Length: 202
Image (cartoon, rainbow, N blue to C red):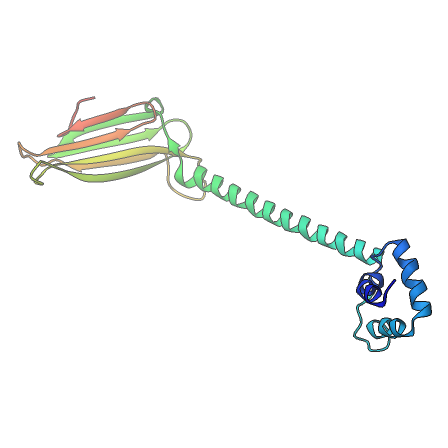
């Protein structure tokens, strides 16, 4: 082989990446060529700046460490995901809850002194939470002609460390104006109950 070819192959030769045939050719050339031997020495031993020799065992160890690192990263991501899912489930069960059926609730309501009062008692062993929203009703000229209040009763798992309980009282002031509509809606899982000006209509 020519010196140029040998010198091109030396980096791979030093890292033991060349074939056995190439190794034989390079060894034979280095025995007979002082200039290439010198070049080889400069790349390895004498200058201390040569390429390090990495044998197959060291490469296998590095590959194994990379695999372990990758596996550990996956385990950490999986663990964090499980913790987040558990936290979300706990929050959902203990703080957010799910809508309850009207069959699970005792409902007592009355209209008195210009006010609708509704008392709910949840009977299925869970604690009762109620979320609500209120909005005004407008006519075509953007005049307020009424209000609508919606409440959604929800059941959450009983927590002995709080005082939520299974009862909830709601109310709404009723304006005594003929052209103003007071709408109060209870939204259960199976149906809705609508009160207009304190009277149950559905």
